[in-house]
Image (cartoon, rainbow over all chains, first blue to last red; front, side, top):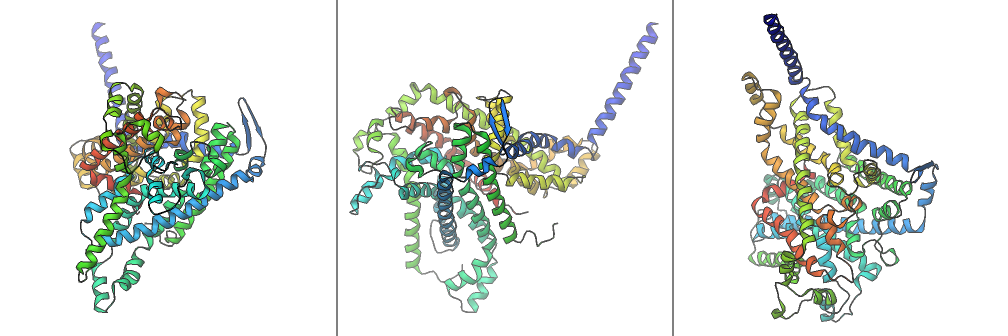
Length: 316
Length: 279
């Protein structure tokens, strides 16, 4: 009895081992491993990206009150057509255009100069320009707020007074409010965009410059006919991230006015979404603003893909 | 550009760059100086160019280190949240990027396309439903609520895939012959080889979560749960009598990052320009 018991026990253990071995072999087969490796990502994608994305679109057709959700068709979207949203759209668009112009042209120029052997201390300058990227918008914005404070004793007004101009109430005029946001964003992003351009400049073949020199090209001609064509892809890329970043702007405005600027001079699309969706708890309306924002961004991303010729090339 | 270097041009351009670099560093310099000045003065006057050097004082820092408990609470929250986000998002993303790069499996292209699509979805549109979800799960005002959405990091997946494409696959076969499991190959052999890409992404994710603002602002409700940017932003009031914490505290949010930057510059550059990686 005892003997058989022991025997059957060991048998059971052996069977178990075999089964475990089977499962382990299964999990270890090269067909299954990749699925195991991607499963946490897929799971979190389903819960944290796909579900909210679908829910956002559904919500944009609903009035969402605590414990009561009603379908109201396109009413949220028709409500979007109002002066406040247009102010937000206008501010965001102006901000986007200004930051794109500044954050494409200046970094390109600075990168081309830094890449030439003409300037000294290039690594120091590159590092100095990159440092602002390490600060948060809140910390940087706080410093800018104190530098551009309304009193005559703050840095910006001191400088204006020195050159004989009147002090400005920086945070209370539409133009100066926009100026503050654009300066803050440009200051933080300049260094990173320079790095993008520098990376692209490494890929311009040296022989082309030599050939151009033999043909008697001047420095400017070399820039326009050799450098610039090579910079086209990176320029489109930097412009695209700047456009998208511009449309998604929120913090640069929040740090100057928290959540209410005089005459809405600092209101942006995301700021409006935050006000309506979170602060006023009107989630359906907020979701509709989000959908509009997403459509804008999708169109821009697709345009970029077309411009860079992503659809022309056959995929690997 | 190879050309005869005109010394005058060189010096003009160098001086021009010195001016640009000065403008870039000027706000940081101002912040540092301001943190050593009486906070009441700053609140009233803003940061000014001319001030009496004898008014410089360590009071703000002394106050922060001795009395500002709430500041250290925020600091701790930020450190903990950033740390968890870096570890989880790197682990999950590297697994996906690696799988997409080295294994041939059904649906590989589909999953890669999925990653690219998530890259294009702006977080702002997911924000309200995610907030609803956090309310349903009773997670509002918790670390988990801040951390969860950040663990899906499509940029990092994309970056790791590019990097893993260049890994030597012969090593995998050699390890298989030696009886190593597929997971052993990943964790013991391939992941260490992906070190530089891990460092770059750790910096990108770490800096993003350290400076992240909108989502924590939405889900964090009480003062003791705030992260540094949210906490500091609450001090930005016109009537603030907390400018001592604000200024010295701001300096101390930048200092750890600058120290890391000095040691790991290469990875900072790689991490922060990750968008430029081409397929």
